[in-house]
Length: 252
Image (cartoon, rainbow, N blue to C red; front, side):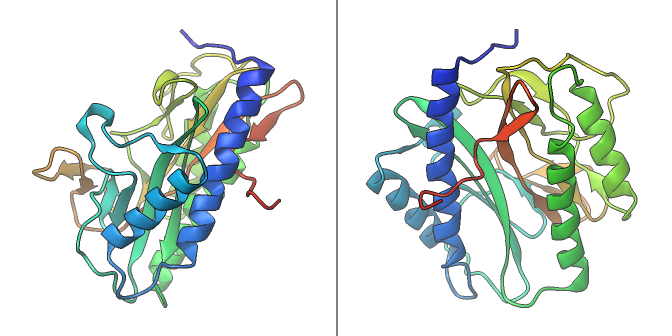
């Protein structure tokens, strides 16, 4: 069942989302060759806690870190580690923040120094697919149209959307209804109503959409070893359209 959030809840999630965007902005200052992904995780966790938030992913179904950091062929749920970023890497940092009981979820992707033309195009297309899909969100629209649009858009560049992981509702819990697909399911799905809050989070691969799982049981990577990229925002359906809850910084 898809819950409808009150104005108070949406305002709380917006404050949480504001903090989350600021974490990403802080991380962007530190993403460079030589830093480890574990060091980035610590920067994120310290920033969240110092601003009164809680890194919600720690302990969620046993996940041990404040962030998921996925590098190059890792699709999602990458473990921070002693791996030192190298020139030409791309990475996605995905995290959930709890501020005063209200959750927000977003992922940004980052380039390490000079990256290949293919990697740059993948990042640009993935982000564009998210932002263009957000334009579809309004009362009376259908969730299935999001996945249909994203798949058609990215396939025009020769890319494929991941099918094993999807967007989701969010509120007091990290994962709620509805399921928000970023590929074409052939179904229109539920209709959007004012007060619904959910994520759109396209994960887009250069090659096949198929994945394989690391031994840690969390980290998913492309089966063919090609690059993957993800961007994500938390959104609220409003009377007139959509509000991006994770798109304002603390200093905006």
